[in-house]
Structure formats: structure tokens, C-alpha cells
Image (cartoon, rainbow, N blue to C red):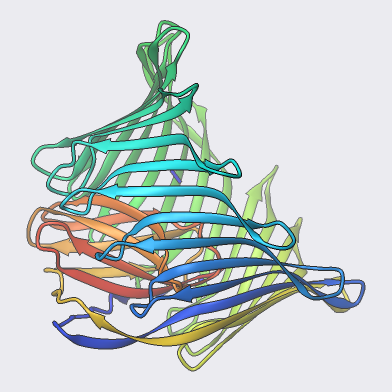
Length: 474
């Protein structure tokens, strides 16, 4: 499982019926590359929204040889009254007109749980069934029990993939998760992976991975163990163990150790490999440095190759709470060589509007790429919700590859975590059980591009919410 860093409390937005607020949506973005001492437009995207600021059209364009723009592809989103996407259609530009390409149709139950996704391709005259995925067995927390994907072959729906989730009743704590693929020749489900979860206090204690044997039964493969500091409750070690068939036991393979400063921000992260006889050998370490405002100003990593050698380093400067310059260095033994500079500009509403990267050759900077972002404001109504009955801390912010959510609850419940980009698109959506007391939830954010995002936590029992804005830096 896989920058200033500072702890902040979630900004709790308490919505009231008929209340309104102003939101900002990206209406266009453009990417240019610097080629032969000139800027060249590479690609751009245009976004359209309805009156509720929900995305309904997204058009991609490509730069041409005349330094103009040609249509490339277009997505149209058709929403139901609840604002969920019922139909998504892609069209491609053929040089003179838009031509259908693919279509996804979503079906929901009365609780707005997704029950069916149907995928069609356009043959020039008709929509042809291609694949579908069914979701069944939802529990009270909105988690499905089974997911089955079919391919449409020769006029018949044929099994392709099956996923199964089991939860610790009556909670939203995931207990097991299995995946299987269909063997049409043998007419049987072939196992792919099985994950089994245990919990320690309010967080995952272990994950055991099983893979299939030659006769299609589950056999142990690996185990991932988590330990925590007790006060304050923080992740301390993450250990990987691999199954050894000779000893019929899990044996140490690698581990990562975490330490924190007084502000609960990362101090040092050390990765180690197991070398036997209860000994561990450090292979990499990452150090974090902060300014008096607890904003990350430097982060550097070293590798242990017959001694510690510099690997990579970032330094950050800020304008208010946002990074406006990121310098990237490449290590060479004990030296640091400046390699790249990235600058960021924001508007008065804290929206990222410009990013430029430049390469450094030891003497001068040369532009490499730049991105422009454009926004419109929308006045929208807010549905009535209430603040969650929990104290929540989000760190680091800005962050890079991983976000930590510390949540202290006075009862056992489950939450849904939704990370949404400035266009209103769901980028990460997960559910997590919450136990009474302190909880720490780790979210990998390495799939998110640099920019601003909203993190919304929803109590799946009371439907109360908390919302915060975070920044991802690369």
C-alpha cells in the first residue's frame, strides 16, 4: 500500500436549506511545450456546466501545425435529478463533424447506490453492447457485496470478472475482498487475489494477501502490518512480510518507519530491508524541514549505497498558504545539482491559474512547459446537512503522495471520503470504518495532479459532512 506540511483542522461547512454559496469551476485549461525557442500549444480542454455547477460537457482540443486548435474528443454527461451521471457519451472529431464513439449508462437504486454500468460502442449506425458491470448486496453503509463484469460476445453476455467484499457486521469495516476472473473454457471462476483485514483500535492492523495455487485454492502470499504510536495516535511502522513455504510462516521482508515533529508533521521516513537474524538494513531515508508556520520548506531523500548518498531534493517558497516556487535537485554523492524549477500563480480566490516548469543546465534556466487555467464563478444552492460529530485533522497540506486524516469520534460509525477536483469531478472515493476514539486514515494521492481539491467526509449513518480544501504538489 502505498508540501508546507502543517496540520490543519477541517474547515467545517454547515449548510442550511435554501442557502447559497459561490463556487469556482474550471472552464478551460491549456498546456504548452517550449520547442525550438517557441511556445507550442499541445492540448487544451473546455468545460461546460449546468446551473448547479455540475459538469455536463468536456471538449478536448489538440494544437496543430498552424499554432491553432483542432477538435479532438468530447464527453457529454446527462444527469439525473440527484446530480448523478446517468449517461456519459464520448464523441471523436473526424475532421468535419463529431462522431459517436462510446457510451456508458448508469443505473441506481432508490438509495442512489450504483447497481449497473452498461458500456456500448458505436458502429456507425447503432450502439452495440460491449460490456456491463452489476453491483449487488449493498449494506446500510452503501458498500456493495458483489461486483460482476460481463463481456458481450456473439450475442451473449459472458462472465469476465467478479469481485466480492465482506464486512464485519454490523459495521463498515472491510473484512475480506476477493477478485476472480472467468475461464470460459473451463467454465469456472479463477482466483486472482484475496485480502483479509484486521483492525487495531481505530485503524487497520494488518492486511493478509492470498493468491491462487495451481489447483485454484487460496494460499498465503504476503502480510502487511501496521503499528502506531499511542499518544498521539500516529502510524509508526509499516512492515511487509512474505510467506515462506518451507517454514510455513510469514517472514520479514521490508518496513518503513515514521517519526513526527511536535506539530504532528512528518519528520523522517526510513525504509529498511530485512537482512536476517533480527537485523534491518536502511535503504532510503527522507527528511522534512519546516518554517515557523509549519509549512514544508525542504524535503530530501538519501539512498544507502555503501553509505548515504543524496537522491533527490525539493525546496519550497510560499505566497500566503500556497507554494509559488518548487526547486528540484538531483543528488550526486554528497552534492545537490539543481535540475528544475516550477512556479505557480493563483487568483484572488486561491485557484491555480498558471504553472511553468523550467530546466536548469547549471548556468541558465530554459522553459520546458506551461499550463494556464481559467475559471468561472457559480452561485449554487446547498443542500441541508450538518457538521459531523467528530474532531478531524488533515495533514500534510499541501501534500504529495499521501494524505493522512486523523479523526476522533465518540461512537462507532463509517465514513465516505470523497476527494473532488475544482471541476467537481470525483477523483478518489473510498469508504472507511470508524471506531470510537482516534482513527487515522491514510489515502494515497499519487494519482492526483498538482492543484487544489476538496475533501468531503460524510458520516454514512447520520449523513453529516465536513469539507476541507487541500493542495497537491508534484
